Image: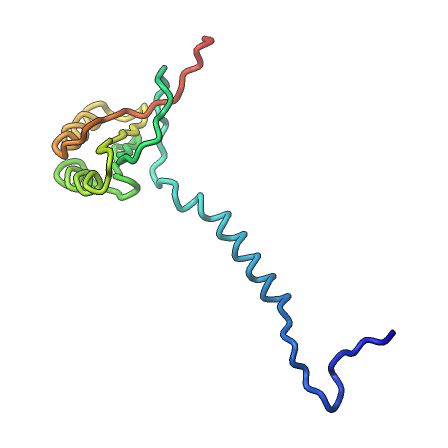
Length: 140
């Protein structure tokens, strides 16, 4: 039982070695799987207050995030309170079918900033505005 290696003097090697191609492809898939969830997360760190609420509905919505320093973002795009917040919210609502805005405000943020943002969001005329909360432990 002998094996032909194809490296003789008369015959050139015509086979393509696909092992390195498969190895590189698998490494790229793994890198994509690891980095994809990181790219979706917001840069702003928010501690959402706890409350007893209904379960969240799966809707097409616009998310306004307010961190503890008062920095805002609309669907991961950083904006400022005022006309810029209103314009970005309005643009995102135009693309949304449900016209729902969810406000994720840090529990340590000044209430005045949240109210100013709420006023600007109302000018964009959403159908519904929700405040995001974390489910409270009902056993306490």
